[in-house]
Amino acid sequence: MLNKSLKSTRRIPRPYVTSPPPPPPPHAPVHPVIMAWHLRTVLADALWRSEAGVPLPDHRSADEWVDDLGDRSARDR
Image 1 (cartoon, rainbow, N blue to C red):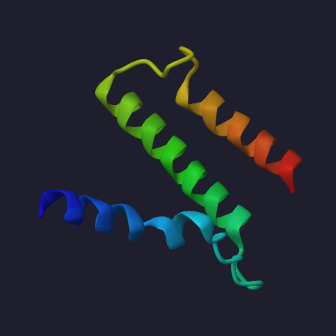
Image 2 (cartoon, rainbow, N blue to C red):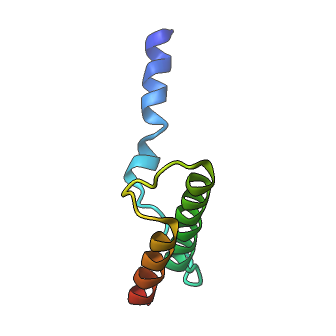
């Protein structure tokens, strides 16, 4: 009985493994959404660290982080 159920579980994932993932819809703005979440995460990290008195990972000030993010996002446009 156990051997039969193991065989059936091996057969189930096969279509999922061999099928390619569907393409994203043409209207999906993937890059801007990812960048927005990245900016939000970095800014939130800088905010809580500066409020808690915890140094930022590269020991710059929060203002320097924000300026750097602005420079990088302007370059990526």
